[in-house]
Image 1 (cartoon, helix red, strand yellow):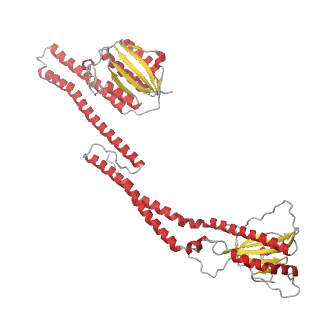
Image 2: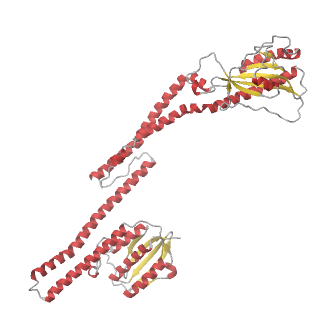
Image 3: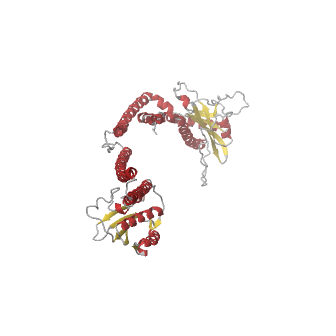
Length: 521
């Protein structure tokens, strides 16, 4: 059946296209990461809040000193203030409400002590603000501004965070920030471009609130920084695109060229221009080297298999042709001269026909056995050698073939199926019987993970001239005794499946065959 490979390849992409898509995806990751900047912006917000807390603690300490509330005693108990803002969860409030003036006499005004302390801190706040760029206000216990850049003697007591601080609780909020500069074009990707952090830190002594440090500052904005250097960002992006293109071309040349060479070789094999695929001299990558080796090994195996089938078919046709020709001649003689042919001659021709029929039948059976051995698949079965030898001993005792072996020496489990091992033994013993053997000496030797089994019979043996041909299919010196020349080939095929081997050794008497099989612990 013809395989339509083109139809299944329609949905596949070229390797160059896949590499380009991968590289471009990697390049797009930094742009996609902009959507994850909120996490980093949250870190920046908390960092800003922590800095404002630190500044507030210093200003609170200075204010307590100035109003004469410096009798703070260290009792060994620490009450640190931690950042509370979370940009991913915190609601962003509207702009900070304006400060309220004090119009009527019934409203509370800042005490002289608070006003004096505020005037003394004015320069401290102004100089600090130049460095930190934070908005700074010092409020008295009624929420009236006593120190700051603006809004002096005005009330901030109505603001949410200030109200909590006047009750002795630290408070921080996020509020909308209106900038006098136009926002960057990519500001919509960020939530932190238009907010400002406000902290209200209570100034307390002995559990009593004497004022509030009210600070605010805009957190750092990574998007604004990127936008400010957009020319450099564009230049780097173009350089990265160019580098990506070079990488794609390099990888494509390292991968596509060896693949094209491999494809060209397979096409030549298909057209019959070459017999096998050669290993690539410059495979480019480890995977392509492995692929090249696999193709070369597969090609060599298929070539050897093809040659084996050709030779086997040639031998089969020759083996069948001889008895068929003999049968055809005998039948023609009987049909043409049946009336005048003597009875004894007719019986001789019929006997020859029967002998040739039996030979063909035996040959067909052996061919089927060879085919089953060649198509056998590897299994995880194991077989005890001693048990198989004991079963064969009782079978061949009636054929006057004695099997001489030591029970302890042969008691090993081998990595081969029971049926395969029995077939190997039967073919070896049948081969010895055909060479008029009456005894087989079986000995074993453990070599690393394998068992070396020696079969030494006392038959007629194998001549020096025939030792190199005994494993050739259909070669036999006992054709008149029913030999087909397939027994050793069947043994080779059965052992190959189980990672085993067979070899012939020269012997002064009889024949010696060595079988090697894997041991099973």
